[in-house]
Image 1 (cartoon, one colour):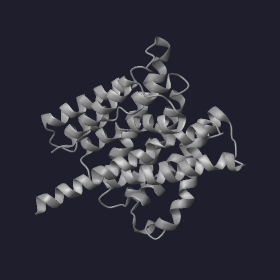
Image 2 (tube, rainbow, N blue to C red):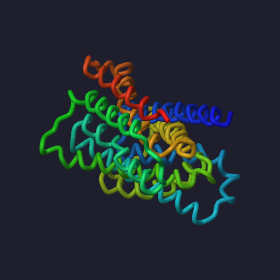
Image 3 (cartoon, rainbow, N blue to C red):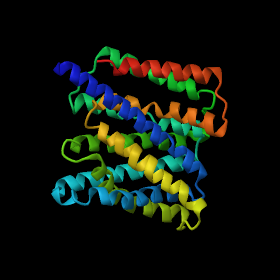
Length: 288
């Protein structure tokens, strides 16, 4: 009975993690619709989430010790660096390259899961990761532009995946004593100073003034920051680190579906085959 309950809990957490990635993948839609420069968009996404989250977490803030709060703020710094590098990489390489390299989170998280958290990884898991990566490469292969001039953007996009992995790993260490919404609220105070500095340095300073300026930012705050990052942070306390890292790989798949439905971007046979291969790999990696 206990084993069955544990399996059901793991399956529920896995589905919640997929739902979180669906919310996160929607971020690309609203970044595209945003009238502000990219780092501004990331800054206001985090800033607006602070005001939306505060009523839900204010009673819990006094219960946290300084060490825990400092850890969460460090996680916020990692998330800010992830957002900054991801946005910059789009100007130095192709969108396909940036999306591919930015989602290679398993290359950071799996070694940490094995060597630091001592998670037991079965051969089936590594087979699943390999199949998933093959599917992702197949999905974006027609759009990748492997030129020497793109290497800086590709490196920045891969660095994005490292900082995002560090954010998730830091959250993993504290999820047993801090709820996900509180983590997202406090982490904002690590993210905002870094985002603000990078924003002013690269883009100047702009204030959203019209509904057209505001609604993509509010959607990003609710869907990507609170529901997406919040749900994924919740799942970091329920799923093994290695499995969570593979779930993140579904983001290019979901983003491709959104692009097809909302922006009428065609999906070739090869891209659809890549999606099927990647989903098969995730099934293998998830199985105990």
